[in-house]
Image 1: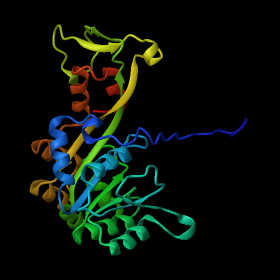
Image 2 (image 1 turned 120 degrees about the vertical axis):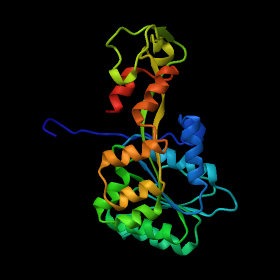
Image 3 (image 1 turned 60 degrees about the vertical axis):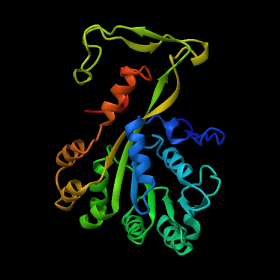
Image 4 (image 1 turned 90 degrees about the vertical axis):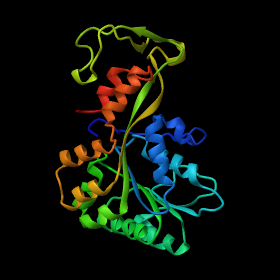
Length: 287
């Protein structure tokens, strides 16, 4: 840089990574639907969101929930961030030609039941994931999109045929991380009119929560984080929308008929439960 060097450090605490699905912050309905997806014998499940939104942690939790002596699980990751007991993990290495696409093609010869791909970055990897799903494997991966409904459209934009997306994708989950209110200094307060956005539907006299700040949370009012989740589960109507290249609002509308709860809605639910604050939800979600 102009006046020196800039450094970014990513600290991985291997002792605190293996959360269970219940510990991630999913509500009961989302957890039940997501658990139903990862218990299926084949199909593609995508977890979407920006960098640092906890996508890999969610995939690890999903693998932890299903791994066992009866299932052979293989992963291709860049890099392998954490070691999972009972899972065969392969690091991507561009210097020796081990890409996501080549790694995936190689591990399919090992007769896996479940395959995790660190990220679908290009058409070749997407096609390999589609092929793995079509040949009877459950494929889990991540994708960079802002919401769950954009996931199938992103695959189509990459060059995957719509009929292949609609026939293999079984679910897509968007997520964000928000800070949790510190349990040691959590206090009630009554927000003033205008403090919450209109879509929050603040009720007269409603009480919310925030952190006052203490030694436990270093005076921030927050300690630890949890996820906001938006799970889209495919059905016949959604498949038809994708086949016809419907617009994003049409896909979201159809998904809501099938039980889709938007990130913002999940956030407001956690605000009312006293898990996080209005400010945190506003910071990481959009209308």
